[in-house]
Length: 191
Image (tube, rainbow, N blue to C red; front, side, top):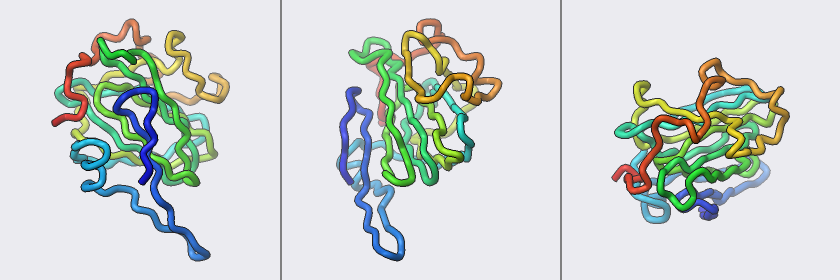
């Protein structure tokens, strides 16, 4: 597995070694031992999967402590633009984001520690999206910021009129108006 650092400390892109031949391919998508030795000691407790069509944007979501979550994200089918926004007050990269294309072809994964808002947009006809979490989902701890926050100015790579949102995702505050944000000193790895 190859580790690609991003401009935000703690957020990394992982590229697995893919072994292919005329039968297809094989890759190791996750090894807890390798992950703990090379990325961080986070222990994942829940796997989630969603299937979405072109233009579906889910996000930008986060869970508030004590239910905050680190995520390890991958795309099994299709292509998505994956985005993580640093929402840790006091962080030198507060309000900055990374975006990465995750596809079934590149098999890249993105690790996002606690303290980040996360979202993705489907750029293919359909996408199957999987992610591991290091804490269980708790609906009472949901938080989110608006995907179209002008201060973030995320380039979602398609016209905003083509974006499909849930009713809930249409009404999130901008980052400057969000009621709860993380403190930079909080433990982003949940250890």
